Length: 207
Image (cartoon, rainbow, N blue to C red):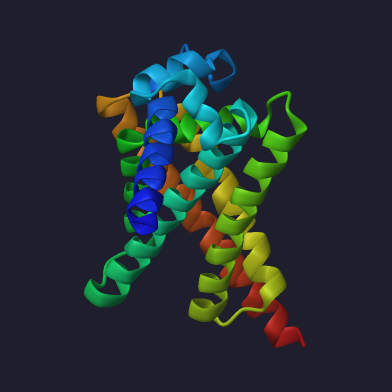
C-alpha cells in the first residue's frame, strides 16, 4: 500500500510541476504565479501543495532542474543518433535544440529568465544546469577531437553561450526568419569548431 501512496504522491508532485510550466508564457513569468493558481491547475487543494513542496521557491528550483535535465537528455539522444546513423553533429544538435524550444518553450523561458533574475538561488540553479550542459559537451568534444580538457571546455562554453542566445531570439520568430537563424547559428558553430581545431593543431606542432 505504501508503494501505491508513493506513486500517487509522485504523480501529484509531477502534476504541480507541469501545472506551473503550463502557466508560464511570454507575458507570465514564474514570479507572477501564485500557489493557488498552480494548485487549481493541478487539480488539488492549495493546502495539499505543502505535502510536496515547502514553498513556491522550492517548486521553481525543481522546475529549473527539470528543464535542464530535459534539455540534456534530448542532446544525449541526438548524439546517440549521430553515433548510430551518422550525420552532422552541429546540424543535428542545433535542430534538436530548436525542437526543444518549440516543444518546451516554457521550460526554456524559465531558464532564460531566472538566469539573470533577482533571486540568487534561482540564478545559481540555472548556472548549475548550464554548467552541466557545458561539461557534457566538453567531455564529448574531448573524446571526439582528442583535444585536452581545457580546450574542450572553452570550446563547449563558447558554443553553449552562442546557442542559448540564439534560442532566446528563436522564441519570438518563425518561418523564414527562424530558418535563417538556424543556418546562421550552424555556420557560427562551424567557425568556432574550425578555429578551435586550427588552434589545437598549431600549438601541437609547436610543442
